[in-house]
Image (tube, rainbow, N blue to C red; front, side):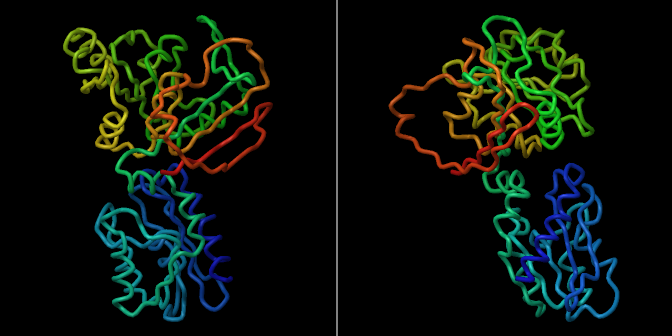
Length: 363
């Protein structure tokens, strides 16, 4: 029971590194001797001290009877900093309790083996599910070798994400929009289709809260994005992913976009569409580990049909449009009806005047 108590505090500590520790996972560390917490630490920022090292630097005295709690397996390789395992062994810690094994193949059990080899008692699996939930984008991207995919959808009570025609309409409340901007700052990239750029002309940056601007990815099979689009004026890094044929036939447009700071990449297409696995593979190779998909209907439909969604956040606004653009296009293919996908309801709450429903999807 005490292990769970101290691990819960460890996870609370880890959350303090939200955003700043990225792209590293959020990690907290707690050193307990007897029934007293003698030191705490967390990974404050990318490139800074890891949680275990910060915690041990604050500890005094003999640690042979102390227990180090950490929500993720201590690293055993050189990265931005030396291995945490070496520091734990050097400090003479008697026991280590970890919530989960690191999914990073550079670690993945090596840290535990190194500690046990030196006679340190190791206990794992304490509050495992809570620790996975804390760093789920990191865990998913490491295991699947693609970015974690988060669909963010805002719809009316009758299921529409936009009215008919070019008219723009804010469906959700200011509170919901502020929350979305905070989410943006916590993702590596935002992804939209060219239709969303053409109709809404969004800025796709972080304005309503503090935080970093994510990279912006535009799926534009016909390379139709205009050089006057707001997203090209915000200073955010922009990836425009198009087809090889469009890149070849619209070379001048690609050059114009490149002059405005966009990175334009041509990918092989199937029936005029860019396969989403290829899109995610490109983003992963460019260092993106989490992507928030913000529209539109066609893009939402493709991600859901391809079973490439890890998390969905659905805002339901107290408005009735009567007609409009649906959240997804219905897929009546026999093959899709045979596919099944398990999901867990994670959150159902009120945000401003809206209802927020969140699901996690599992392969």
